[in-house]
Structure formats: C-alpha cells, structure tokens
Image (cartoon, rainbow, N blue to C red; front, side, top):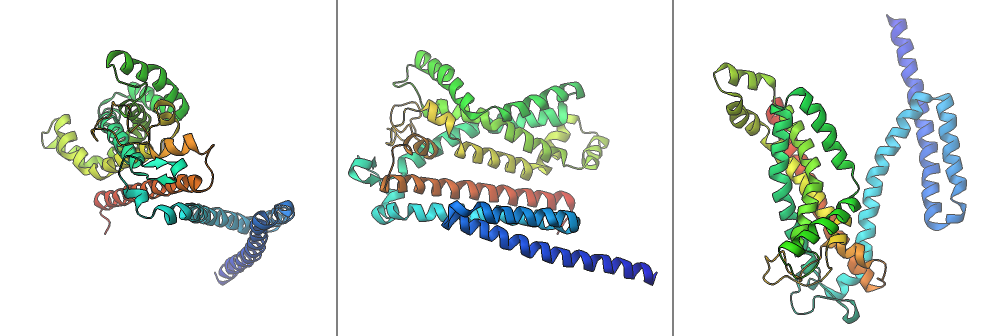
Length: 355
C-alpha cells in the first residue's frame, strides 16, 4: 500500500515538475511572440518557432504536462483576446468621444450624422437596431418556442430526425445568402404589394434576421425543455393530466428560464447581424418619422450596417465614430450574453435543486 502510494506521489510530483517547466518555457516564448508581433513584426517567426519547439519537446518528454499547459494557454488566450479587443475598441473611440461627448449617444436634430461637418450621433442607428431587433424577436420568439415545443414534446421520432437536421442547416446558411434572398424576394414583394417608398425597410430586414435567429431560439429552447426531469412529466400524467396540460402547466413553466435565455440569445444574434441588413437597407442616417415607422425611407440604418457600409471610406474621426458604434454593440451583446448565462444558471439551480 505504501509502495503504491509512493509511486503515485512520485508520478504526480514528476508531472507537476514537468508542468512547471513546460508552462514557464511556453509562457515566455509565447509572450515574446506577442511582443515581437506588436513591436517588431519582422522577427515574430523566431520566438514563434521557439514556442513550437518547446511544445514539441514537451509533448515528447512530458506529454500529459504539455497537454495541460496547452489547454491552460488556450483558455487564458480567450480571456486575453477579449480584453485586448475591448481595450482596442475603447482606445480607438476616444477621439470621437472627445469631439462629441454625450452628444454621441444623445444628439437629436436635423443633422445627426455628417462626416463632412464632423457631426456624429449614433442615435438613429441605435434606434434602427432597436426596431429591427424587436421585429426579429416577434418573428423568432413565438416561432422558435413553438418549434421547440413541437420538436421536443410532440413530434414523432421520424419527424424529429428530419426537423432537427433541417434546423441545424438553417443555422449554417451564410448571412449574406439570407440578405440576398431578402433583397430580391422580401424587398421586391414589399415594394410591389405594399408600395413602400424605397427599395428596403426596417420591417423587411427585421423579418429576415428573425428567420436567421430562429435556429438559435429553437435549439436552445428545445434543450431547456429536454432538461425538465421526466419524473415531473410522468407525475402530471399519472395524476390524470393530458399531454397538452402537462406541457402548459409543468414543462413550460419549469423550463421558462431556459426558454427566456433562448430568446435572449436570439436577440443577441439579431443585434449583431451585419450582412443581411447591410444588403437590404437603404442606409439613411436619420430618425424615422414617426419614430415607429418601419416602412419609410428615413431611419434605415443599424449599428452593424453603418460599420459595414462606411468603414471602407472612413478615416480620422469618422473611423473613430465607427469604433464607437462597435463599442455600443459590444456592450449590448455582452450584456445580453451575461443575462442569458445568468438565466440558464438559475434554471439549473431550480431544476437540479442546487443552492
């Protein structure tokens, strides 16, 4: 027994030593690679080769320790990259913040976006983003929840095996394809049948990105419904409730937090959508008149479409204003993501009985 314990302890001590050696060498060479990339791009290859050599030797000599170090570095890199992106966006948006101040997100008037006059207000684009997101969620929310209920609770096995891959295929279609179809079908239909004043509208863009968000809502909501313990459903059936009564009185209330998280994730997809709205909108940086008009020629711009349509011609303060739009988007999507994670955590606590 003591011999076995001694061998085990020795093995883990050896692993810890290997981890320390490989970790230190990998961290130093990786840091040198990053510094070289920023300060001396021409010599970046040399520390990078050193980093790869350290990993190669570690994999040959301390395979388990090297695997642990690589996974730790990959995890840390995601946090570092997120931090660098945040800092870079904030730094690049400083010039326009100094110029406009709070007017950047509050200015309302006849001229709200005019690079030639050095006037930059994100209010029209923020309002356009809000309207398209609301429309998208009116499409993706009810349809997504209904689809999740059908797939998870009602559909026979053969239908589920057809519908789920189809939903996954919808999620894999590039956004530019959705945008092009929306441009040639939705815009054309609305122009011909509804006689809208321009070839494009916030309503059409909202419908298309709602369809794009639909697979996300269906998938996450279906997972939430599936997480409801079968014992709760079986107990309801045993007490004489019908399948529909069980779904409405037990399954949906129990999975409400997860379903809400699915809708929030769908909102995040709608807020961050770029190519579809860029293709479909007429790009007018004004507020609609009236504000709720989603069919008119004014106010046809979102934060993402603004960046996508103007970054190629922007410079100086104009470019800084686009980075400020990116900061607003980043904060919005990050808030929605954290909110969905919190709701999912609460759902796990309620269903799993965790404190």
